[in-house]
Length: 113
Image (tube, rainbow, N blue to C red; front, top):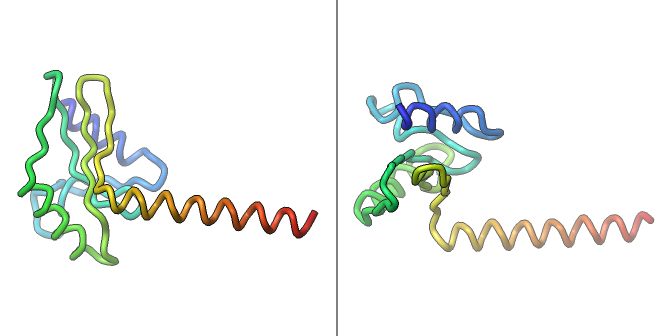
């Protein structure tokens, strides 16, 4: 039930898309997508959650082979805490691009004003 609600929330998130029959058929790998990420949803009522290296590496392989080439991520709900787990390099790439785009916007605003 919690997993179903989590997948529904993913589908309602801007840029999110819930997979049909998530993970049950080869065509619909994992639980959904969010922007450029292939998402695996996990929930627990325990106070912790363990991420398995092999599972994450398998997910990376599936993400990269999903057109147009996605990145792996896990959406983990630990009780009411909602987390998004991605590889450090993906975070650094996204953050660096955001900083560059912010600087470009600021430069364009200064030039026009």
